[in-house]
Image 1: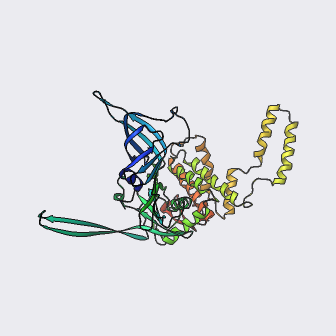
Image 2: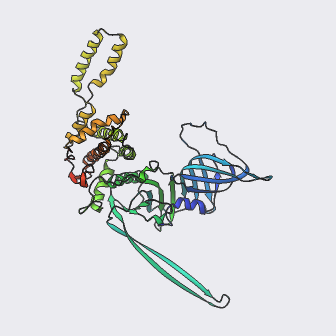
Image 3: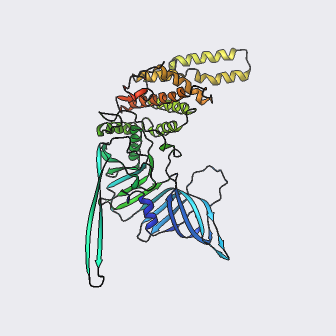
Length: 476
């Protein structure tokens, strides 16, 4: 698929586009090229006349704002193009002798697009990814690549003979899985690094059909949770029924500042019947379907963001991040399931009476007016369930055990949030706390979404499979 990956950049660089509306770029523009840098950001390089000018408004360094600047393009063949979120950041002017050289400008692009307005309707979609690993997984399906080479030899140019031969080279890789979710069929494929020069763990999702952006985002989120990897979204290509390009999109990708490639691949639950890291199509389908169904009720877009930043965090602060992710999941669950978990120590009616009584006590107290105001301001929080008890209540509602080690890790997470250093000699225990809190989030998520019946206990030796109800055993 080498000729298909980064299709957007290939089309923009090869299809003789001209920039019809330069936006903030210096103009007139003579030529341009677009590429990805080592951080997977899109970098636009333009060459303009020496006396080129720009209509961009200078922004003070450090200004926080939404970048809405854009440039429009059109090719000689009628294709349309666009650069969105366009931020010029470097201009290079040179003079050799008395001759001014062309102005070279660099700009970061958030999204690049192309569109063929005369194309047939889209029949297929491919989402291009990074960090989709072939290993350590054993994939359930294979893909076959046939490369055909045609060789033409002309003997005696003026009155000779032409010999034509062709050769096929076939290769088969176990690197894909067929999945159907909400009636949409798609194929998850882990590609070879040769398919995209400079890639680390390239992959794609090929859709038989053209589902919308929101559905495909849900699928990527579900696949990410199921496989235990942070998937880096590079962009999308739409094709017609004959696999002609209809439209393309490339984005400056976010890879947790490249930490995504360093996070160990740890799937949430067993995805096969025989061994660890086996990908079974039925189990993978069940998990992705469960996460897609729960995407909106549980606000999985936000939880996905919180979880993977926790995984990328260092041990001294990671417990605070995992704690935030768990609290966010609890809040989403209680909001989606009113009445399952109590909201306060006292009922609403009981608290109303008690709150009035406490307010009267404060009014009659022999303290300053400032102190009375401060104490009354704290009254709304008096009836709130503390986070430790809230976790126990949610676990009980879901029929999950809270292990002693999990409870201890949960209590210690606040030390990280308040800057308490890891005591010397307790480094291994701190890393195990990270594993326990990550496992706690995963158990809650799997139970709430019904994505699996078991989980993989990464906090214990041998990474044993356990029923969701069962907590990791206590270590002495």
